[in-house]
Amino acid sequence: MEKDIHYDVIVVGKGNAALCAALAAHDKGARVGVLEAAHPEESGGNSRFAGGVMRFAFHSVEELRQVIDITEQEEADADWGTNTTEEFFDDLFRLTQLRTDPELSEVLVTQSLDVMTWLRSKGVKFVANYGRQSAVVNGRRKFFGRMPVEVSGGGYGLVEFLDKAAGKAGIDIHYSTRAKGLLLDGDRVTGVRASHGGQVVNFHAKSVVLACGGFEANPEMRTRYLGPGWELAKVRGTRFNQGDGLKMAMDIGAGSHGNWSGAHATGWDLNAPPYGDLSVGDQFQKHSYIFGLLINAEGKRFVDEGWDFHSFTYAKYGGEVLKQTGQFAWQVFDSKVSKLLRSEYRIKMMTKVSANTLEELAEKLEGVDAKAFLDTVYAYNAAVKKDVEFNHTIKDGKATEGISPPKSNWAQVLDTPPYDAYATTCGITFTFGGLSINPASGQVRDVTGQNIEGLYCAGEMVGGLFYFSYPSGTGLVSGAVFGRLAGDNAGRAAMS
Image 1 (cartoon, rainbow, N blue to C red):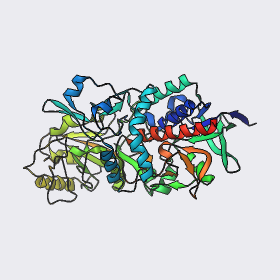
Image 2: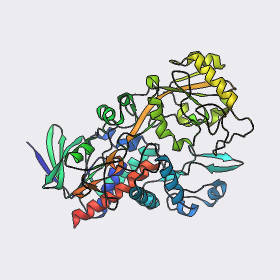
Image 3: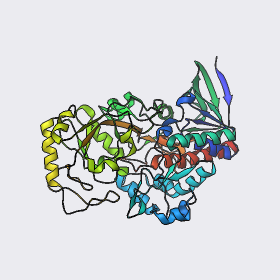
């Protein structure tokens, strides 16, 4: 027997984008129901696994103070930098090779600061990103990567803050409730058909917001859209992002948009579990490769580790690791950079070997041609420019000469034992392909470009923003921007 439940707005998903949509719809006076496929302990989507850094446009410390509390002493003691709208656009255009949708990117960049202040008004607490994106230079702290702000408690904390706000607002959350299809009245979406406890439940509403993630946890869809070998990738986040929302929308004629053969994929511990572990969070990642070498099974380098700060390469290089024989790569460092390695290099659950000589290390790199590795390191050491000073807080131009691939920055000779190496594979975060939406309203468009009445979309399901790579910290901000946009317009339409 089927059950019927009625709301003004239904939101599918319960991560950052979904909760922002639910709160925005509630602000318009709508009665909101949230459908979450996971049970409470695993709920929150990929957002709960995120590191929590936030990339948004700001031009001054005064604008940062709209988001976080900064004392006069803190202002004086640090170079907070900027991420002007021009700088934000430049990074996004550069990394997506100018393919990012201009209308979507305009919304993302120009509304990013405002949505941060809106999140703060909902009880989200932000703090200075001292740990991951700063260093003390000549007695004064310097932020780099244009991301001086993160969420207190990371992505886990963000979901907790938004959960609390949703509870205060009286928003109903239906856990262990998997959306199966959209309800229609003619061409208009009127609700969601879902499954809960073996029972079919029809959730009727005047507006539906889909914000339930991409298809990164679905091996079949990864292989079909990203290509052979992608079924072997580890999943950094939730196991519940199976592409259900994308499929149910396209089943009724929604248009697809964006880089469907692309994904955010990073270096991830080789022996991490197949899906994210909330007790470890994002700490299986290994993002300090810029200070060392990436070595494949053939004992060779295969990327320019120092092309840019990790914030601008990490989401692409995981896919490069997946292309290597055996889908793995070792990150190799000497002790000169040990203090620069991020916190994830000091957890207990990781695959690491150490040695006092390069020759000894070569024998410990499981799966690697030891002789070829040594040849690679010797050639690299000989190619490092000796007359350029190393400076980890800027792109220092300390590069190699005469080898391929080059290392463009932070190239230091590996000559100071002990040597450490970390085994990594590819960890997929989210997929870039998604639905076509109206940038002004968040409304889903059909294959002819017309709005589908009653249907909205937010978060990782929005197609067209990211191609090839991704500037770190943009995902959570994008989820909040388009979540608020979709929820605001879904709520307004439902109450009109």
